[in-house]
Image (cartoon, rainbow, N blue to C red; front, side, top):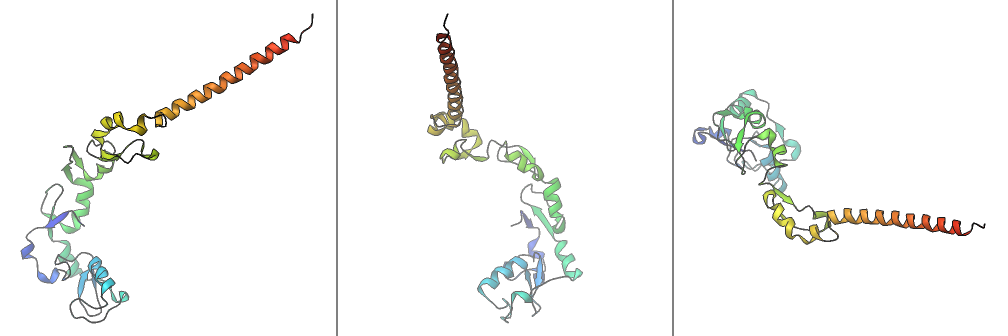
Length: 200
């Protein structure tokens, strides 16, 4: 699904539209009966039918071939689209991918103005991003926006229990400390035993 809509769609030549989705043909392929469709549309259609949607002639998947006629491709690629993310219009369809990755700026739900190419990095810190509890690996099924995490951690049983992430670290420290004390005690006992064995 593309994040754009066609401008002046009513004026687009019907010959450039796919009869399956009724949109301008995307990634066009032709059948042996010389009918052209969107590649995804005809592939999905073929799963349930083995005939051409227009003339009903039997077709196989091997009968589909990419359209290479520049006249058709140029007409499709020059169609004007409007980005639904930033609302910029008058973008040629074949330039949309460049716009999406390099120049598209839109307002995130957190009200920050973000470029599409920076979105993956922004999602790591966005307060409106849905995230899991820090104790998810211990069984907590809480999922909500990042801005709600702090309040959740105050009441989450797994975060605050003796088996929580912090508690586990503390227990490990206690266990290590206990082992050290036991070792120290053993050394003292051995020293006392050695002192008792000395005969004057």
